[in-house]
Image (tube, one colour):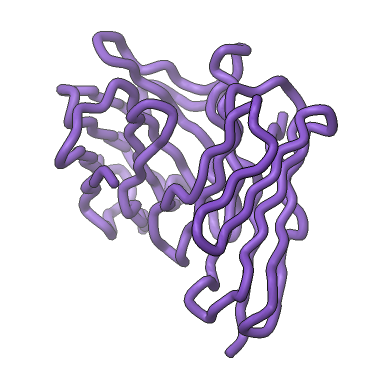
Length: 112
Length: 113
């Protein structure tokens, strides 16, 4: 069954605006990670947040984790056209008998 | 960050032939390697996982005789699609684990005619 599920599935914003993507999951996790994929390419790791952390920042990225709601959000501030890509959350629950599972992704389009 | 090289990036083959995809870590030794399949505009579906010193563990529904995985060393893994058919056409991506993070190859687009 799907572990991570992102919403929205697609998001279109203007350059300079903020983009927020959400991810929900079903089981206990060790950590949750966000990845980015440009069209037809591999994935690039963006940020990892551990199950005992609530918020983490990296440059223009801000990730939150609410383990009570089993959800996470990725905020990209001051978006740029180069941020256009698909963003995936992935849950690492290997200590709980689950493999590394990716959600369906959010396709972000940042319009110049 | 760590670098994972995957090739070929694109391969076209005739139905019934076998195709080998190679995944190599260039600057670290990977304890765990993963192979994924991705359909257009969809997420990654894990096909198999291989850990150091053990054979690959295949996900339910993945035919191990069709998708042969060889974890040749701590820096090299290969996926061979045997007797490929048009329904095997897809984007295949490898990743190698280093600690909690996976480092991905650029992917291989397989088109079976």
